[in-house]
Length: 180
Image (cartoon, rainbow, N blue to C red; front, side, top):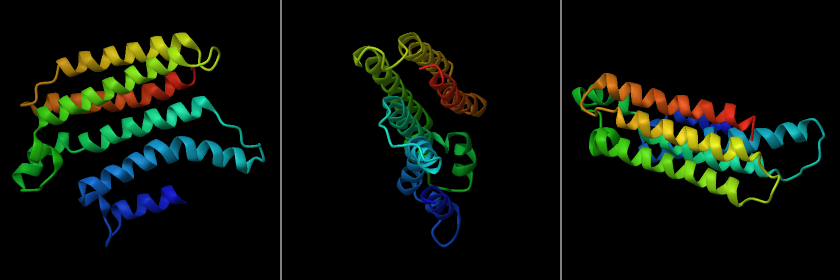
């Protein structure tokens, strides 16, 4: 219900928190990151009567995806930057610029992947399956860097492709999660 409520105030007047970059970012990160992963997992366990047990894997994915969703919240206006400029709509992307947003987003995602790799390497033996946890995140980090190098911030098609690749990585993380 918290996720549903946050989703509603994101879009529904008079609140429409999506108009405020900070409120929109916090909403997206909270719902897509924390609530969707940690909250749903433990709500389902409770609904089926399973006892609460702390899961390092669920904690990892909730943290990782909250950071990832924060990046998505910051980059969400990149594909619309030309239209936003044309209609004088002030967004983070129009204020800061595509190149700076992409640089910062890529750095944040890369650090998120490095943290995932370190988590795998430093965790107690048996907590994670090492090959997918370390190798899978190294592969996804490499994909991120390759896609970032292909970005031409002045070309709308390139910006859209970059943003699409961020979403591709987001969903690939869920595929990887089934293996870790």
